[in-house]
Image (cartoon, rainbow, N blue to C red; front, side, top):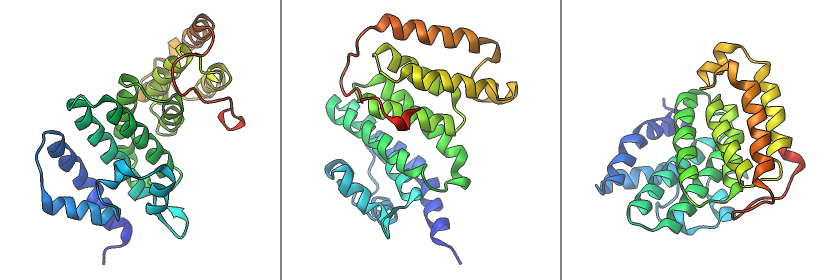
Length: 229
């Protein structure tokens, strides 16, 4: 007998091909209904609901369902690319930020069997965030989750972007990040996309870039937070 987790995992596996078809403008009404049923959310609501209402719709007994949140994040990213192809850049940026929020919710729960898929999604979402005019808060959230997923090169790319934009916590978060990396095995660093021999230079480059950036600029820079350390 399939458990709810088995059921959602099945749709997470189906979602990749489904989203690629949507990105090319292909429709599948029956699968639309199945994905919406698995999410317990109409696809249009992904763009229309506030974060608060979306969180409630992805929750059971006041707890976000991490599997549904991951599906929502993947779907938001894909629809964001569709909006980008339509030259609706603000709508695309909103959906990329929404994907970041949903990923953050998802990774607060147990996604063990989906670890490989999470890493690939983190990579794709980070790339989208770096190419769009999005809030620094969204980039910082994905940066932190990328470290959890072992995608260290993704963390570094986002961290340098944030430093260049004058994110006030770039050093207070970044230097402990490099301390944590220094404690890892070289093979783990390479698996995460970094060369162990470059860590000292990367840390120095981060400080230099942050100092050169001057006062914060860009939109949506979040204030410093005790939770960022």
